[in-house]
Image (cartoon, rainbow, N blue to C red; front, side):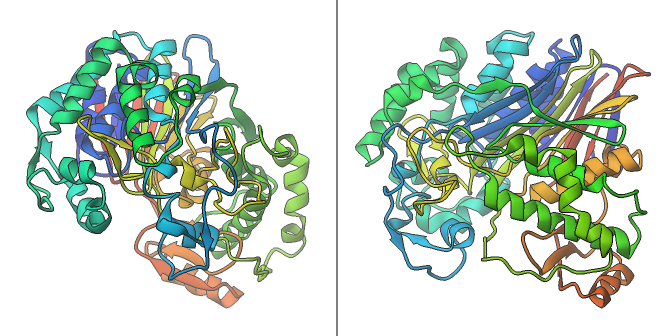
Length: 538
């Protein structure tokens, strides 16, 4: 499938990157698997092929799924949780160094030894394997070993390092601090090239064990004990009790209506609430053509309101009081946008305290099948290669979920025992009279804005998968400048500047969006995206 295209199928389809991962999912559909089997197999293949973005030891899998037979929609929250021994003073806070790291960009501080980002103190129970296992266990059709088999085949054959080579080069100075990680990522003792063939022999052994013993072995069995033993031996606080107690949340999603559609997002502390808020605010206005200055001005002003709410109110609701019902209410949205309604051409120049920004190592998988099953799955390692801690002889690179908690004490998202970190993953499912659509993307904080706009295009303009993910992008947080991609026409950019906006043109905002949809009247499936590949089974 060539980049930036759309496919239709009478059986099922997958939108994902890297390309071979999407093809894995398509083959699972051909073998009789459903959309959920395909989502798990594709996600696992992503873990093999692009470990800088995700891995079986990655910190989060966040998903929204729609059961075709029942119409029931579920949120799956396989977000890492801080170990029981964690506390808000466990990291030494230092004055801010030069910008560039997660702490400096996200939290406006530095942390001694960057201990919440790299190393064993950055590690909680990894959510990725439990998320995949839970989706398969509750909704899959095939045997677990059949879902794992394509990833084992990838490992047996070997594959080019591809984009992983560039990520290794960028991180090589930190990677060399971790002996097992250096050995795994640089098996010949040098930075690989993109064309070098990689044989992840240790990961092959791990995946063979998981295939035979089941995914729970990762938490309570032989693999789980290897993970804990190494983390503790290198200064971490993760225990086997923490691993055994880890269970993904399977609950009703957060849901709102947007015009004629129902839109479902994953629960906190994932990012869906913020995108749903944005749609609620958009609904307070009549639709505007997207080729107008007024459309993009309104978008920027609404984003500021959403981000101020997000950074002020949101965290793990099991630990802090988050007014979820109020934030998702239509009345609250109407109140928040009233000033913009009264003064539609005003540019909000308020400058709250700096909140930072980051790009995360993340991928997204969307799948659908002809039975009406739809899955939207976002998976993440955190930053590139997560904690950079590799468990010797396993190939498991552990995510750094602890760095998604604020290392500074006294804040809503600060570190606490058994607390889930706030993250930016936003898998969405959009239910329309004629189709059900799964959509999502990687891109750190940019996911909130870019993914919501794609959803808005699907509803307001009837955009197909490919149309929804195409076109200019915009991102702004609590205050200006506003970032826009260079695809936004000059006349619109100039019009925004004339209104008083501070505009920063950029080459890209976030990663490729992956979209899969079930077309109800035809009983068919369509998938599309950009910077992606779609696999289909007909």
